[in-house]
Length: 82
Image 1 (tube, rainbow, N blue to C red):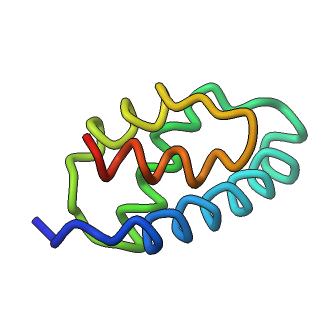
Image 2 (cartoon, rainbow, N blue to C red):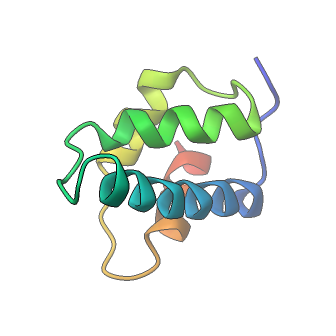
């Protein structure tokens, strides 16, 4: 297992995942919503930051995050405090 990233590192990776995933939905899925987005985000983040959590644990944590604004900040906090 890789060391746990800082909240700032995780927030930056989640924000980058959001940008990349939006491009994926628009250009690859032709504008359709990706129902499996938590796994996509988890794979992106773990690819960038290392295997600090099992993929299914990270995906489930991300799936349960709700935030009106700045989702990546709320998600990073949820992962770090888990």
